[in-house]
Length: 401
Ligand code: NDP
View 1 (spheres, rainbow, N blue to C red):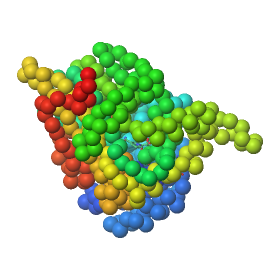
View 2: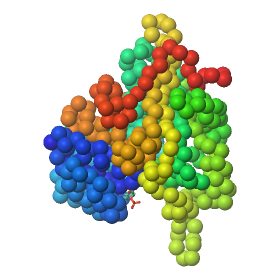
View 3: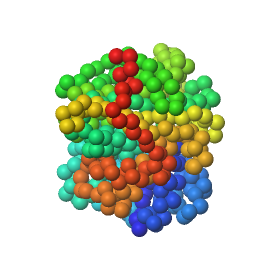
View 4: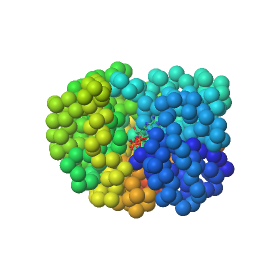
C-alpha cells in the first residue's frame, strides 16, 4: 500500500485522481496539491472511495514540494501540473528519494520549445538515488509509444515506418476551445512541424503538410503533420525507424480562430505592458477561454488515436494499425471528464499502478516504450481504454500516396 502525491488539479488530474482513488488495493493515501486549492477540494469532494487530502502548492518552488513530500510521506509523485514544473518536481523527488511520473516533457516558460534533453540529463542522478522517473505516461506521449513497443515486440523483427494518428472527432459546442491546457496546446500547434526521415529531422512550416486520413468509427478527417514529443524518444529507442511522423486533426473553424488569434498577436508569449502590468498575451487568452475540464457535459463524438506501422517479419513486409477509440460521453459518465483528459489520465493512473506494484520499477529516467508493454496492454482495456489491432491490411495513412 503506497502513499501518492498528485500535483495539478486540471482536466487530466480530475480523471487520474478519481481513477487512482479506485485502486484501494495499491494506494492507501492520496494527497492532491495544486496552485489553486479549491480545484483540489472540488475533485476530492467527488471521490467516495477514500478521503483525499488536499493542499495548496506552488510547484515552481522545489522547497515547497520537498516540504509537502516529507509531510505526506509520499513514495510516488504524479505530476499533472504543466510542463514548466517538470524540473522543479524532479529536483524535489531527488532530494527526497521519491519516484516520479509525468505526462508531458519539460518546456521553459519563456521559450516555446519542448525536448527531452533537460529531463534525460537527470538519468544518472535518479539511478544513483535508486528512484525512477517515468516520462510522458499519458496517451500521446504515452500509449502511442506503448503501442509501438507492443507492435515491435509481437508483430515485427524490425519496424521501419511509423505514423501516429490523433483524431478528435468530437463536438463540444463551443466556437473555440482547446481540449487541454490552452497555453500548452497553442504553443505546440503554432510551432514549425518536424518529422524523422532517413536519419535526420525534416522541418516544415506550422501545419504546412496535411491530408485526409480515415479514422475508424469517425471517417475521413483532414490531418496535419506536427512535431510531437514522443517522436524524439521513439527514434532513439527504435533506431530501425526510417521515418516517423505525427498527424493530428483540426476542424476548419478551429484553424480559422487560431489564425485570427495569431494574426492579432494573442498567441504570443512575449510579455507586453498593459496598464502598468506585464502580461503574456497567450496567458491572458487562456484566462478567457473555456476551461478544458468543463467541456465534458455537452461533448459528443469520440477520439481515435493510434499507430500505423510498417516493418518486416521473417523477411516479409508487414503492417499493423493499433488504436483506441474513446467516446467523450463515456468519459463523462465515468469521471465527469471529457475524452482528451480521459485518454491522458487513465494511462497516468495505470503507469502509477505499475510503478507502485513493482511491475514497472527500475532506477533511472525512462520513456514509457522502455518498459515491458505487455502488463500495460493487458490491463488498460479494463480501465476504460480498450484497443484494437488490424494486421497486414493497407494502412489508412498511405491511402492517397
Ligand atoms: P490544466 O491547465 O487543466 O491543469 C493544470 C493544473 O496545474 C492546474 O490545476 C494548475 O493550477 C496547475 N498548476 C499550474 N501551474 C502550477 C504551479 N506552479 N504549481 C502548482 N500547480 C500548478 O491542464 P491539463 O489537465 O489539461 O494538463 C495537465 C498536463 O497534462 C499538462 O502538462 C499537459 O501538457 C499534459 N497533457 C498530456 C497529454 C498526453 O496525452 N500525454 C494530453 C493532454 C495534456 P491552476 O488551476 O491554479 O491554474
